[in-house]
Image (cartoon, rainbow, N blue to C red; front, side, top):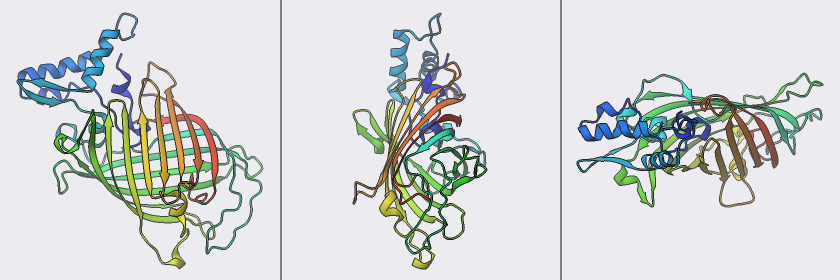
Amino acid sequence: MPTCRQILLTSCLLPIYYVAAAEPKNCPSIQDDKARLACFDAYHATNITSNDETPSAQSTEEIRRNLNSTIVADGDPVEIATVLDKYWELTEAEKRDRFVFRSYLPSFFLPVHFTSNINSQPQSPGKELGPNNNNYRQLEAKLQMSLRTKLATGVLLPNADIWFAFTQRSMWQLWNAQDSAPFRSTDYQPELIYIIPLSKSLGELGDGWRIRLLQLGIAHQSNGQSEPFSRSWNKIYGGLALDKGEFGLNWRYHQRISEDLEDDDNPDLIDYIGSHELTATWLPGLSTAMLIWRNDLSNISQGSWQLDMSYPVDSSKLDGLRWHLQLFSGYGETLLDYNIRQHSVGIGVMLFNF
């Protein structure tokens, strides 16, 4: 039975990354005979189980050592691929075809999503006040779909790639029969992402931590509505990702691209949602946990935090449906709600993995 780290997919953990075991498809490319055999041994070590399909303590310890080390043969280290390597195809051995769509951010359906402060009359500076919909219910559904594809490889730097991603997030008044279950809000975000792998010599931080990549991006986000409910912004961002064993950290800084005041749907958006985004993830076993904190650092009382946790519906099918629990507190769960403080909880399923 494969271990959780082998099968669990980084789409459920955003761009945060965990160490994974070697795959046999990469082993034949290793030139050194001893290193090649060690690679196969490392893979099979992660699949050792006892008769009751539960890994023994000895095999579990072997797995842990394999996951957090490199293979050494004749003094030359051969690195075991991490999930980050596989997810963003950071090494030559992990490169795959272009124009193949894969998942990006978590894709989930939360049919039970309760919001403490439903925004029945959204407003923004400089915009006329729209109609008040008192029929909106605090209990609704939340749906997110997110995909990406690689457009070009080896751009400017070795193994550096350009990706295109698209994310759609909707708040659906599923339980509102009075208004025929309308979609209260839908946000769309296309983006271009430039991923730059870092060598071990440049990324090593000590104590097991290592920076795996640098990232640059440009994105547009809007809700596709007309005045006075139109909300949109453009941004460029930069950041880095690092990991240590079952822990991962990802930091991004978002710089808004300025607009003419008369064209700006939400001039104070960054004041509420923040320009810094820090994501911490933990993969202790079958379960996953991800905590996202967004803030502008100039006003700690603004921004938001979001906690996502998942667990497989069937523990024998780790790449299948997963139960998904989401907690949110702060500003900007949707663009329409960017200046409204809300607390929400949602329960449902993660739809698919990468």
